[in-house]
Structures are given as C-alpha cells and as structure tokens.
Image (cartoon, rainbow over all chains, first blue to last red; front, side, top):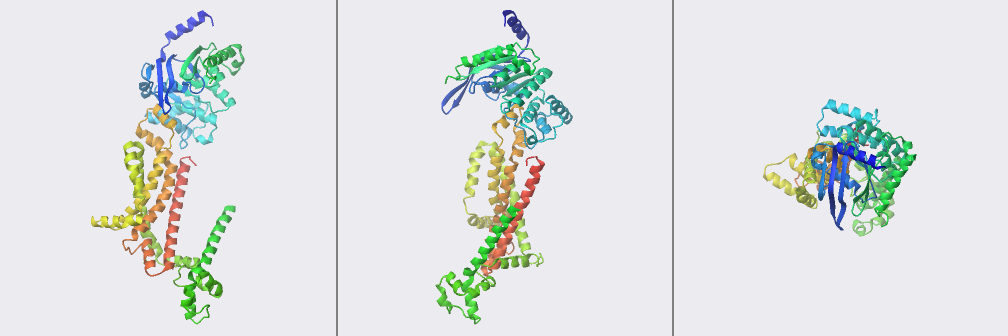
Length: 274
Length: 304
C-alpha cells in the first residue's frame, strides 16, 4: 500500500462517523488465581459500515472486547462509546444485534417465533413482527422454514436463523462472536459468502470475532490482530480487497499477502511461545 | 414385544415368589385349623409346632400348602385373594356403599388432588421467589429441606389438632398434610428448571434489554417445563401418601387410610392388602395421567 492510498483511506475514515470508539480500554477480571488482565490499553475506532474482524489465540480478549461493546462486561479503565453513547445506553437503545457461538434458539419455539422473540420483547405490533420475520428470513435465505422447529434444521441453518434473530429489530451494528466456529469448513465458506452479501445489502457495521485467518481476511475491511497476557491489539490491518469478493479471491496474491501479514502479527504477539 | 416379555417375566416371578411365601407364612394357622377339623398333621398339637421352623412344617405337611392360599384371615393373603377382594369391593359393590373401595378411594383422591394443587402452587411460587431473590434463596430453601426431615407420621396428628382447634376440619387438614409432602419436589425441580437457561441465553435477553418479567415468561418458565413434570410425578405420589397418612391419626371412617386402619384393627389382612393395592393402582393411574399430559404438552411445545 503506498502513501497516497493510505492517506485516502484515512481521509475517508475521518469523514465517516465513528460507531465505536475505544480509548485506553482496560479490563481486569478478579479470579481465584488473582487478577487477569483481559484487555490492556485497547485503542480502536470502528466506522460506520466497517466489517471489523478480531483475530487472535484464545485468551487474547477478542470476545471480551466484543462483550464490552455490548455492555455484557464492564471495563475497569479507559473509555468506550458506541454510537456516541456508553455501551449500556446503546444496549438499552437496542443499538446492536448479537450473535453467539451457539445458535441458542429456543427449542420450544419455531424458527419464525424465535426470530419474533426480540420483537415481542421490544413491543413491535403483530403486523410489524410478521413483516420483519418475513424480511429477515429472506435475508438469510431461510424462506419456507419459519414453521420448522430448530431440531429440524442443520447446524448451519440454525446459525443462519440466529443471525436472522439478531437482524430482526434492524439494529445498525451486528456483533458476532465466532458464529461459525462450530461448523465444518464447507458450510462455513457458504455462510461467509452469504454474510458478505447480507452486509452489502444492509450496510450494517459488523464486529466479528474469529480464530480463522482465511475467514478474517475474506470477510473484513479491517482486521484487528490481538494477543494474550495481557489481551491487547498488536496490529490493525486495512484490507485493500474490493467490496465484491467471490470465494476465489482467496487464491489471489493480495489475499495471500494479507493473510501472511495477519500470521506475522499473530506470531509477533509471542502467543505460541508459551 | 421383547420388552412386554420382560415385563411379564418380572410380574410372573413376583407372583410365584408371593405364592411361595404364603406357605411358610400361613402354615401354622392352617395346621391348627386342619387339626381342629380332624386332619392328620405332623407333629400333632399346636404347642409342639410352636417352636418349629415354618419351612420344616411346610416340608412335613405338603398336603396343606393349597390351604395356605385360601385362609379367611391369613397372615399373608395370596395374590388371588387380594385380586378377588379388589374385584368384590370395586366392580361388584355400588360406589355409594361404605364397603366400596371406589368410594374410599374417592375420599382419599379428593384430598390428594386438593393437596397436590396447593402443594404445586406453593412449590412454584417458592421456586420463583428463590430464583429471583437471593434473600429468599438463603432463607427459604434451608427450611424447605428441614421440613422434609420430620417424619410426616409424627407431624400429621399435630397439624390436625392445631387446625381443629382453629375450626378447620373436613378435607382441608388432609389436603394440607398432602401439600406438605408434595410442595418439596416441586420447589426443588422448579428451582433447577427455572435456573436451567445458560449464561448465553440470559446474555441474549440482556442484549434485547428484556426485563425480569419477560425473562421469566419467555425463557425461564418454558425452559423449566420438563423439570416441572418430573417433579409433578413425584409430587402426586407424595400427595397420595400424605392424604393416606392424614387419615390415620384422625380415626377417619372413610378413605384408603381408614380402610388400612380398620383392616388392622380387625385382623382383616385381605382388606389391608387390597387397600394397599388400591392406593398403588391409584398412584399409578395418577402418575400415568401426568405422563400423558407431559407428553401432550411437550409435543405441543415442540420439545419432544
């Protein structure tokens, strides 16, 4: 990347409004074995429409950072804003949809009723609920499965249903914690492709935790490389790949080069020495 | 088909064992009766037989074995005697008769069902409180456990006396004793059931900014259903025991407990055993009915 393009992306970022802004973020868990520093001095800005991946070995704080954004964990130092508010205010304003590693669909609800769950809680009208369920089922390619129960669906389809549930109330931010981690690689490829299409259509800001280098490089506009003990950011890589990404892009030299840089970043974190 | 065979084998084994047990249990009485009737028994004279082993007597008087299955007041009635008594006091008697087991069964059943309803309601309420309040968890749960360590047979008369002195009598004291036994499995099962959603499920609701109420109705309560039914099955059997025990110290004239008591007063072992089997069959029917409701409910919920 030459200087000129770097300046351009920086300029573009200044123009975009930051969705998440973390400054000097610290989080220390008190455990029986003494304090564990899950996050140390994390600085990061996520812009509107970004697809940001967090990658690193386990214990690097990538999930913790996602949970801090979602106000599921409280930082012990530093500042973070989501949509200009504190994470907890953002949560109460239903600013984000969260996708967990397990689909976590309610077994006693059909797929459509599972997707309706957040809408019921948020007090959508019956007609609006129907409408939203129909829209998001289409978005994740599950039309016709609304009346099925979760156990009647494959693991990949269940995870798509859980993404639909997170999209149901149309929050601008989508936070995903290793959503495809438990799926096999063929299904994962397919879902990655669909996720990119979905992102292009909805123009959401996505935070995506993964421990797969190809997945991170394929999906992201920016890749945040993290390393453990203490959990910190070691590198932030801007992807030069175009927004339009067929699966074959993974064989191009650009792709391989970014993947290489991610791997270097992971190695620089000394994460595999101990 | 194979499981049916296994079930029948077990039943057959129990019946054979039972008949076999009748012989030594009843042999002394039978020999006395036969001797009085002029039959030749070995050895002669009741005093000579008193200290002999029952098995020895059976071996020496094998001709008397059929008679051990047909006594009027045996120590251990034979299966067919109990079945005949059950048949005579249920199908062959008008249900309004004081000697009808159906009548007595209904008296006990009504107290059982009322007690079960009270116990289940109380159990669910306590479980909801315990799950949502740490104070209740710490203050109520130990008492619930302690309450079950007191033998109900010791507590029942006192409950009845105390309630009688404040003017409560009739079906309610029995129902309260039966509730006392049935609330506990419901509390334990429902606490476990209401806490069964994992951290991820609770986090998910938090991301929707759902309140406690919504969390209860949309997640905790439906997730607890399988636990609830398991508890209800234990609870209803305990309720029945409670209702029967509640009939014992009151000198009740109606109910399965009264039948047991009257049978033991008058040495009517066949009546005792038929009341016991009546209670067991009733419990089996109640648990089976709950099983059917469980299956229908979970099927409707898409959980089975």
